[in-house]
Image (cartoon, rainbow, N blue to C red; front, side, top):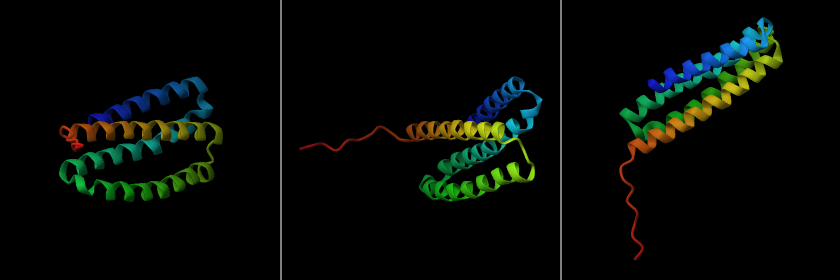
Length: 128
């Protein structure tokens, strides 16, 4: 849960800085460009931590299902934001892309740490 708090805090601070930098016309586009990737990353991480703690063998199937769900969600999310809400495309796409990449990188680093903490000392087979 500490990881999710850091994701939310860092995303919020950088979005506030970006909205201050780009002004009020881009404010909503930047915030909504951050909100979708952040919501998915936070939800994914909570589910990954819980699944890994309770039943690590189910983690791969959860991640595959999550990947399919993310594809559908992000396609619909971008369509709604650009077509229905008619957000300015450049600030929205720049924000969305930046947060999408940064939060997925964060998830990958957290997964690496989670797996390293869960694995005991590696036993290498001897070469005899």
